[in-house]
Amino acid sequence: QVQLVESGGGLVQAGGSLRLSCAASGRTFTWSSKGWFRQAPGKAREFVAAISGGGTITYADAVKGRFTISRDNAKNAVYLQMNSLKPEDTAVYYCAAGGITSTSSRADYWGQGTQVTVSS
Image (cartoon, rainbow, N blue to C red):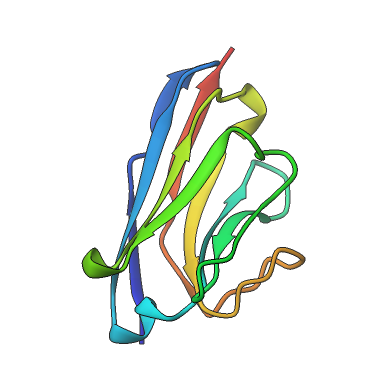
């Protein structure tokens, strides 16, 4: 069993930065795939970024070059550094673990979500 708790969301102006953190409990988190998804109002949840258990990183095209995913296995944590934020990045961001692929919105475990709002 894995429990995920996100933090770090908030309101930022376009061009600004935010760093999301996800703290995890459960020993299986260390070797599970970990990632971030987002859901904007009226839209489906979409893949943002993921890091596999082996360390392979994947990004959605919309965030490549602006967002960076990282992990700290010692702290059971995963992070999402978001730079050059745009109003279209506004969404609830969810941390996820296990069974993540870039081509679906499925994962074995989900956090509760944290709101990111980018003003123009």
